[in-house]
Length: 585
Image (cartoon, rainbow, N blue to C red; front, side):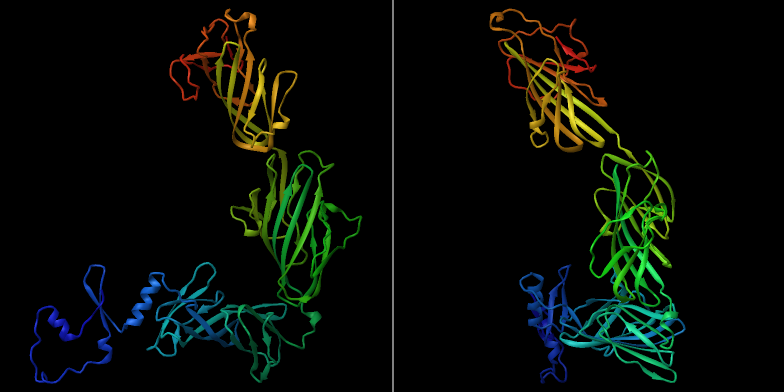
């Protein structure tokens, strides 16, 4: 329970009496703020004084803590953003000013981004008595994070001094800066050129430049997010400004025994003049897969008689000029029919012609019944993690390329299947028939299998399970006595098959007479087989005498294995199979 104590009340509570003073006859002058003092129990149980905390604050905080009330408002809101500065000597010196509205007297975590910038001084606040703030590096692409605490429902002003590098290409100078979003924002930059032409990011408004003798002021309204501003001399002939392209790619190559299919997403931009077309060289021996994209078209530009081994050349034509980035999707296909067996295949490609920088990732996808051998390579290296658009379960390898034309030789070979089986058999000997229950535990590695053959000479199949794994309509026994167990779908990993079969032991005329039987155990077709476990259990009215001379490939076991058997009066016999052609007689 919180306690409200004045000074005299606190003294009486601990049994002491305040000493008399000259002003004892006068009531003490107590400020209003001192009356709003709570004594709250701390972790160790002692009371801790909490000044400046009235009942409404306590009640609201307690409700929020208990989850009984929620504040739908965000903890902060950037109401206005201003960036003002000057460009000089390859960088821009900027002052960022933001007016922030907070709703609680707590520390608010406010991502500001500003990844490309270097902060030159601590955060400044307009009124240090009402506002506290400091800067800290963020995580997961947040850039810088400002921690702010101020009076609730009041606007607080913060300032940051920034240094941002500028890039120059093709006669253009560019400022790139990731900014927080605000309903009202502006950027003003003075550049050291008397007259300039400028371009700003889409979604912003570039005001007419204001020129003076010592430079030009560029003003942009609505600056925010991934913002860019570039400028150049207006008298420069547009044809003299080169197109300086950069291309980032995300490529997947799907291989099987008949074809290689590529899908590429290229993000292309220009650091020079705007562009409305560029050329791409496809992977060697491949052909463009026609498509009808929106915003651009793709067409072949090399003649029909051009050598396809160097890669077909296609041209991407945009609907309008742009500095980018623009995303373009291309698909290519190579038929492997007629290719020499074991030939090395080049998986690299999609080189943007004349791009000064090309970088990206390549994902190789191969069906489970094939595997890839890697050969020579140039400009690529293998990576463990691929970007999210390329992550798939059937990706067998990922690569990162840092140049084009790159080279990545691969050879596709059939994947071998390694099949191991651990068999377990139960023979239930009756007066007229012997029932076989087989449990086959397979371990399938490598390529997937479509069926599991089992030799069952002399046995009549009653059932094969489970029905969620076995294609029951296709189960059959051929003329050689081999049971073919087709699977519902190509499978690998660990699976279990259950087979029920029987064999007649005596005719009605022979009842009561001794019957000699030789019962061959099933032979699953597999690369390796573990020792078979056999349990033999006679019916209550049957006397069973094993014939050691005719029994082969089996060793009697004295220990009792964990095998599920029906309840019978007689004790079962246990054997371990030591040979694939085991026979119980």
